[in-house]
Image 1 (cartoon, rainbow, N blue to C red):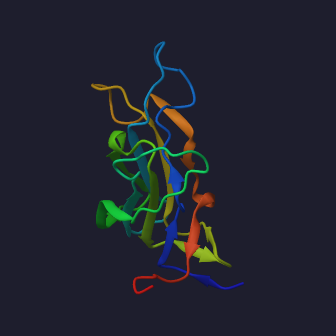
Image 2: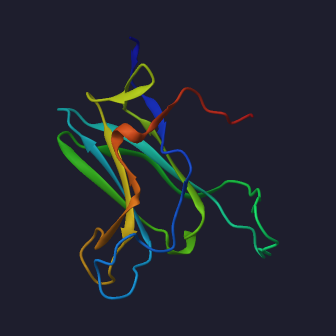
Image 3: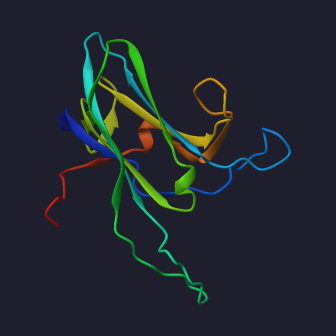
Length: 167
């Protein structure tokens, strides 16, 4: 078993559905309009990580010509968070609006003080989770109606062995 720290992790690509899976808030379907990313530092010293959310949009204009639907779009940055310190024994939460990104493909990537063993994220350093769904305007931070299809637990992240900047 090989173990390393300071790793890059990703959710891999995921589609943002227009509506949440449940109707917990009101009679009408709720739109997926918020992505919440939580970093947890379970150690006794400060750790840090950066975040990047990228998108592959639907071509515009999109003309339906039948199935199968096949298209390619270039990946572009949506949000970038520079290295951010997460104090010892605490959580840092980021909330990003994604209402304009419904039906698009997103990808979350993070680099920082993560522990990895045999290409799997393990405990001992930072942990991360991603959850998307609907937030009612004027309510406290967080989601009123989460969407299970937009939930990525720490163990769901994939370890990136190297950056492919020149590929």
